[in-house]
Image (cartoon, rainbow over all chains, first blue to last red):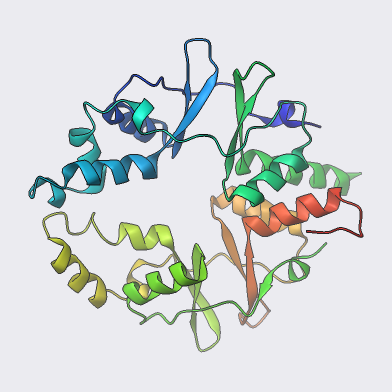
Length: 149
Length: 142
């Protein structure tokens, strides 16, 4: 079994040009903490993290005393309207290839302290994402199958 | 492999009456995401960094930062913890712990003996280490 068998292929992505406010809204609707940022050719150019968006929103609100009293989740909707995701995104710490074994994803998650990793092909195009839930699910299924045999 | 072979023994704990600010400091200092809440040696709940974050702004959107700190120092862990805690036996197989974490969408399980006494903590990172080690030659574990 390799990562191609367990990765999530239907992804919600954003481009560098959409606003931070829009990215925050998409994260909330999808119930996610990270979104991949892709170029028009679906090549992975970065990741936008919920935490970074909230930190940036806080920074942008500093000149406005009243704005700081808003809950953090609302703050980003107002203060990041004119800030493109390209200025808020971070470089992916690691990427994996779809034919890598599951253990490699586990090792990278431990090494980089992240619970989700993008899967790219040789041209850098985003093919999927593997999360810790995908990994745990695969290992639990495998062990249960062995127990039955 | 069983849970007790991969868990962290003697974990940092907090009392239900510990102020949430103190719990937040312990989480940060230790680099943890969860702390077991223990009363007389028995696990009564788990408090996570997520619980502590949610204890703040959603309760007091109208307060300033000074008032927020004042309020947080008066809130106790027992008010924000997840209780009762889902726990696992030290003798359970690791895949069963992984299965429970997936099913309940949690990142850790306090490991308790039959009397409910805390023996250790088992986290998703421990599952990852186990996954990596089962694929490695025995001489070079993580």
